[in-house]
Image 1 (cartoon, one colour):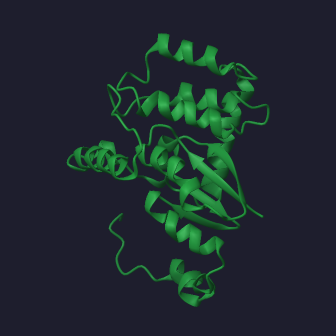
Image 2 (spheres, helix red, strand yellow; image 1 turned 180 degrees about the vertical axis):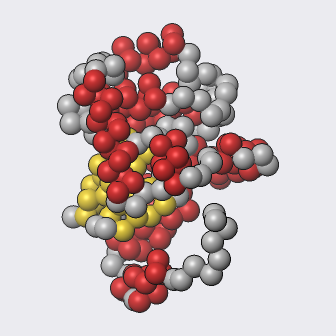
Length: 213
């Protein structure tokens, strides 16, 4: 049985869509999933990037595409009252829901739906309090160990090569984005294409020009 690590932040609509598509795409395969909360903003900062919703033009396209993808896949998706928002309280709540910091699928589902199915503010204190009472976490989301664990989980993800969400790790390989799910399935099915030099050496391609300098 393969163990998959699903790195997510509820701020990402693509993570929400991938979360719901994963069981369907991998149906019939022998695997288990561990859900690891991370902070998307910290990943972006580490890699010197802006999020899709922080780039003019790309912002509107991101929302339109995700709404269309939701319709295509039969997934209820409504934009929250404002986006981006601060996901920190929700991600700490995800960590706090489990003694070891790995929320189960039901908790993840509840958190994603809180953001992406109501059209309401994901930062509203009254809603957050109601959500916390409903989840009844094993630890306080404000506990120092929860805060430290979220930072540690994010740092671990960066060290493993994660640069965005959703990202799914299998063995030492990272599959990024909703559109990588069919690719992930082929990998788990043992497709020998993933053993060729193109796959293993693609990251070693020389840089022709560096525009960061």
